[in-house]
Image 1 (cartoon, one colour):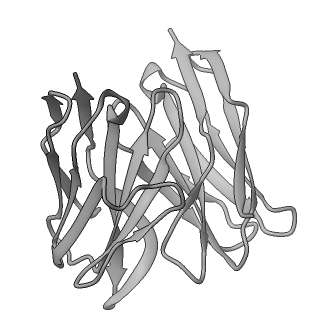
Image 2 (cartoon, one colour):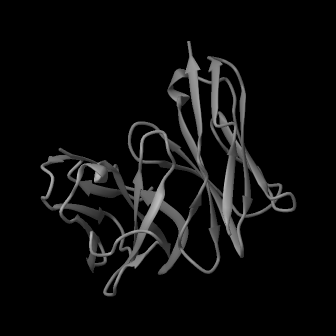
Image 3 (tube, rainbow over the protein chains, first blue to last red):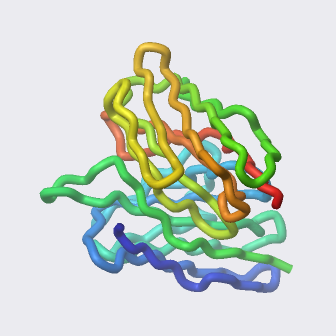
Length: 119
Length: 111
């Protein structure tokens, strides 16, 4: 199966700082990547769709200025949580669609996730 | 509004039991349904189902889709403690690459 990596796996930061999370597709090119957050014992909540070379598409209720997404290459998308606060503490997961024959398929492969704790 | 509903929310069984997890969906322009297993980290892919009535199998896990009744089931036979996880199903529409996730079923298998 396809491999998606995330870095860092865990981050603890002080309130008010910004945190950058990287998501990489290791053995395939991904024109589209997705960012989710997951609270304890809850399902995945889609935050935004990251499109290579263009602006991300955010889901309703997700602040664009707070969660900055950059998809600068076909293998890398970054999520920056700006001025993080304790309520931003969560598990952040990225995913990418595995392409087939140059076309994006509907099978998403997930990175291992980043656990963010804001003190 | 598109939605995916899973049941039960939680299930506790003993090793060796067989379990059936349910997933019903209402997805406009439905393309496929996917099952994932999530342990401590991110979800890992199990199955993608696009056609009705064709069972997909992987070891002790199997899944089938009913596009007429809009549901899917995931069966796990002879459960093991390593099967303990949250099982997520997600609907995939044609007009977007987004997945619509259900709330998941938390399965706990005790020895």
